[in-house]
Image (cartoon, rainbow, N blue to C red):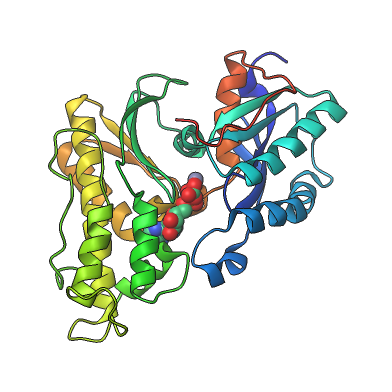
Length: 338
Ligand code: KG4
Ligand code: ZN
């Protein structure tokens, strides 16, 4: 079988803290399993790489069995090998190589952020390039131009914290549990997004770059005044719900404004969003609203395809396989890959 599009591709992702395996054929998800580890990392307020790697080693075979079971066998393997946490990446990569060797299957390494874009190809109907894609996750925030199938041109990225990291750090300041994004979204439901006037760093900067660390610091000062050692940060006239809603509004405003502006500038008529932060309801609303106002169609995958999953890795892998790309069993992890 030559063309990846017709192949049944086994996707594997262990780049951060979800152990995920999926089987995808012609943009259809035949099986998908995502085993999370939030409870293991919650006491530490963030992902502990060593704990994540060990948990992947324990959860990989159950995830694989849940996907393959009695179902059809894969024709090829696509595995995230970059970027990510090195220990976690190596668990999925070693398993993928062992499977490829044992079953005599071709293997291809996938870039995790390109896979977040390719998650949109699992929509029915899939978006057709050219389009601009906004990817916002726990470790990355960036804009891609996708001029044609298989080409991912980076337009800009965060200069400091990622949008998801900003959610996570502000949640920690507010005393909300990890992971912060979903906690802030929940707390924000009863809050007023205009309650606190927070800055919008780099929103109006002409570049496609982002900056979120100032937002976190603004929240810190808002909570603690000029004394960062104060013990009772959230006591005061503004409720946690209002602070959460204001933070969520600021992040969604910056992301949606910059994504729509990049699409307009490049005369792209479509915008795709992805990454864990794209699970956020307010961001989804604002991107849809601003896209509509600018005459730009918006493709938003379901939440389960925005947060880390292996179906998106299989989708990106299918593109690479179709283009004739194959890697050898010497494929290595590249944790800091651009
Ligand atoms: O893409 P992802 O699942 O993993 C990485 O590759 O990082 O993204 C995880 C990030 C976390 O920072 C998490 O707080 C954020 O996505 N996130 C959200 C929501 N769900 C997950 N942020 C805002 N609202 C959400 N509903
Ligand atoms: Zn991710």
